[in-house]
Length: 128
Image (cartoon, rainbow, N blue to C red):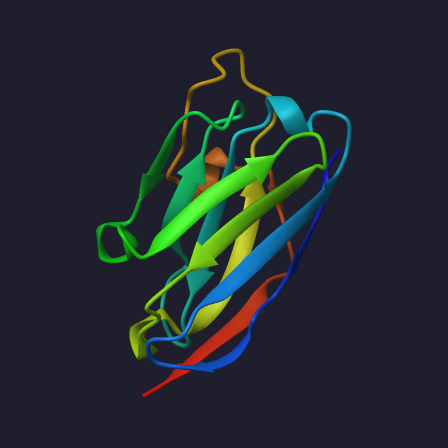
């Protein structure tokens, strides 16, 4: 089992930065691929970015590439999402997600169904 808690959301202006954190409990964190998803009002939950269990591989939604950076600290059971140059279109509830441990430590996953555990979400609102 793994319990995930997001923090760091808030209300910012366009062009500002925010860093989200995901705190994980559970002994398998270091072997679990992780991801960030978001859901805007009236829209489906969508993939934002993912990171492999060893932290060496990541992939991003095209619209956030170059602005967002995912990272993790396996020693602290933490994952982060640094968001720069925020745009009003980034407004959403952001969720961290974890997949049960995988054999290949370099794998990343972009599908909602690829993940087994979810946090409760953190609101990010970007005003123009």
